[in-house]
Length: 419
Ligand SMILES: Nc1ncnc2c1ncn2[C@@H]1O[C@H](COP(=O)(O)OP(=O)(O)OP(=O)(O)O)[C@@H](O)[C@H]1O
Image (tube, rainbow, N blue to C red; front, side):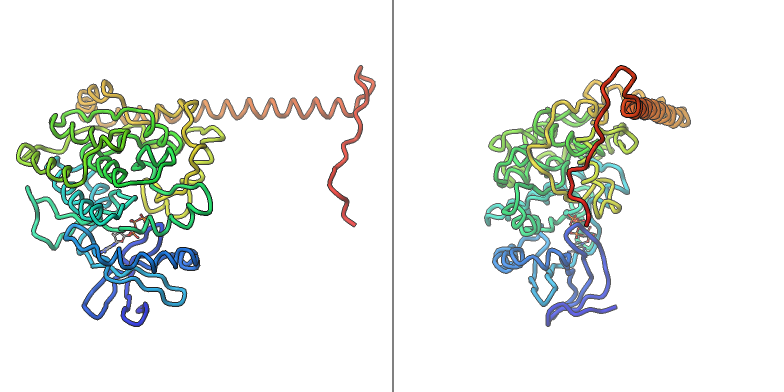
């Protein structure tokens, strides 16, 4: 079903959906394009529309081979659309979901490309603010890079900023994807270029290890780890590459590399990484769905379960309320986090054993799940028993004034009576 967007574009078919809108395959005066049609509620936000128009020049002028070009921005009736260069390929999240992790040379080549794109943006004064695998497109039509790595392009430039800005003025909310949020954002500082470097190093870590350094469990725990915990090393990674990652994940933004420097340093590593296989790091404790949450944590779980979560292992950009998030009393969930360095080292041996007896790991997981469910059931039973006893005592005390207690007055509602 074709649909007109403004006077110059026609869209035919949905090619993807994100938290801010739907991406369509379309046609413009100069050929095929990708059109991101923003959600209706965003398009109805007059502050956002104003900003959209204001940012048009900055976003459309960002022209770099490692950035998905924004060709046009359309405001037409209730439609608010970004017209983009069409990339023939896939996004990095889909590649990661397919492969689990990437060979070091491929991962580093992809991230060096993205760092090039960031360097151009930062030089133009644009901070991306939502660097994550979903926003890296792999151009499969382009000539591959070192070791056959697909060429990468960063997309969604400025979208986080556009969508976020009106909200930031309305409330003290921050927007981002928890696993990739730099500590200074969580602490409420203005996001600068270094937040993109932190996010990009997190993506590199994820490509190599198969999981993010501070992810896992509920959002509150993830935020706390970004602020308070040191990045756990990835076993088996060459030292030089590890130092680059650690530097870019520094808590202090000023200690991180600049984008251009990051791209250069990563490319220096490429020859030494040739032929290295994907690191075999088993994931564990990454699925907290069946864990009992504290009431405070449950708030974040609800936020995480918001619209759009069906499409991804992790949620899309979610609004977070700073200040309520980092809470050192939530240590019950640290068991869900990425394992410690010693644990990681022992996993290599364990995973070999698991491969030898494939059914054993599954049985162990199942038994652990059943144990957790039993504990939860006992807790619920105890709470119900206590509540029942309290209700029985209240009823008894109210109806037995001669049982040694003064009679309780009848409880009256303070609400006005209905006429
Ligand atoms: N320029 C493009 N060319 C080709 N495909 C694209 C383009 N832009 C986006 N897509 C596809 O559309 C999907 C959705 O993109 P979109 O930017 O809306 O969401 P997202 O980045 O996955 O999530 P979010 O908006 O929550 O950050 C992408 O994953 C990608 O597969």
